[in-house]
Length: 217
Ligand code: AP5
Ligand code: ZN
View 1 (cartoon, rainbow, N blue to C red):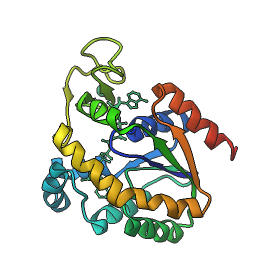
View 2: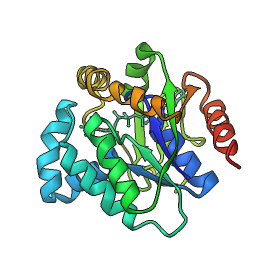
View 3: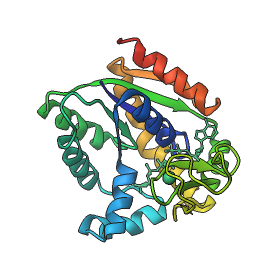
């Protein structure tokens, strides 16, 4: 089963994708994570992407569609993909159609996380992740069970994203409204969109998504 998690910055795409990964054996394909890894490595893609990401703007369609195709080819046969942060433009939806068709795959659902924009700045500015395993946390909503220690790997080092400041978040939201929201009608016309209340507790959101996935058994 292949699904897209769609929603503005801070909607909870990454949080929910990593839960589905753990509970359903699907694989999270986050273009944001892939680009951040490329920046860290200092690869040619990373060098091109860094300034664009730090400004909160979108990296070129060709770069992200290229990395998604490569990553999909590495999945073990029969593994479902969770697209997190991709596609983000109408051109990317067209690329994804081709990428999936070439591999004999197709989309089962586009799950839209509906959220209240005012809450998003708070969610993003409070976000931090484990520096070792990448597990995601929040200063108010999702603290590690033992203070200062990652629940997943026990590391005591955490980090914050350079684009997680109030000013850049506003640019990221404007990009979402202008370039990403227009992809919804495309998937609506195909009957693939399901809406989930992204303002609920993290667990409640996961339950709602799992109930949708269970519709197909
Ligand atoms: P990307 O990494 O995709 O960032 P984003 O879309 O801005 O999304 P976020 O990661 O900020 O939010 P999220 O929805 O995953 O929320 P999370 O689960 O962490 O992209 C970064 C940049 O890369 C882009 O700006 C662009 O430059 C580039 N890029 C990436 N993909 C691209 C593409 N396809 N095309 C072009 N450019 C691309 O949750 C946020 C916080 O809230 C966390 O702390 C979490 O603990 C907390 N939280 C989550 N759910 C809840 C809840 N229900 N209640 C309370 N708190 C919650
Ligand atoms: Zn960890």
